[in-house]
Image (tube, rainbow, N blue to C red; front, side):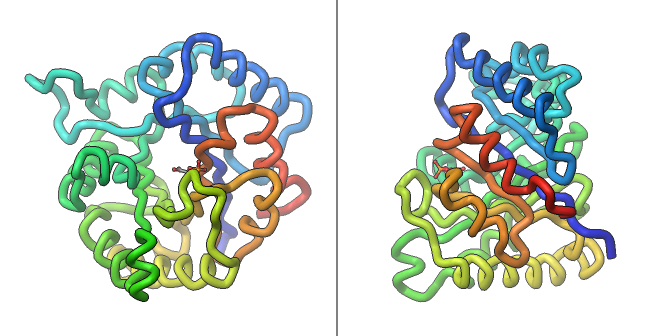
Length: 256
Ligand code: PGA
């Protein structure tokens, strides 16, 4: 079995104006100065910056992702953006089912599934987010919740080349709190086993499972060393090129 190539993806959320493109230029310079050949790097800026970010990142090896898409290709859906439009802007991936969208916009698993299918249709990698709330964890319902979200959100046809799973405990997002390495290992191992059931063992063995929730340079090494953690989805710490690069550098000198 070939080792899974890790991915560090930065999710800028609703942050970033034109001057923020300077962070992308700085990131590009970091990677040029000291490449990290054993891991992939991606940035997901807001939709308003995608086209310009794509221009900045040309030739850098840094991938461009978006944060959401509409399930349909085009049509009368004011304010929405299709996966095809994101691909047209230079994106190669899109986050779907982030907990902030599940909460702010009432997105349910069936919609997340449709968005992931749209991503696949447009040739994008779907980064499908799952994760329990603080109450779920308190009620010992973490694995049940994650299983239900995976079952509902991961479409048929998902495989390592078009899908990434991000396990993001809701209570860890933006709070500075993180689960213990043992807790992360338990959920990631569980996610891989569930994926085996959903998409087949072979596909599940190759698929990247990212951890997300308060990843920063200070804890990246510990978290990214956990078994079955194939990278990170980074929110707050991705806004600064130095921090995102520091997280990526955790993979310096590692083979995978
Ligand atoms: P955080 O966000 O790193 O700021 O906790 C992670 C995410 O929501 O993807």
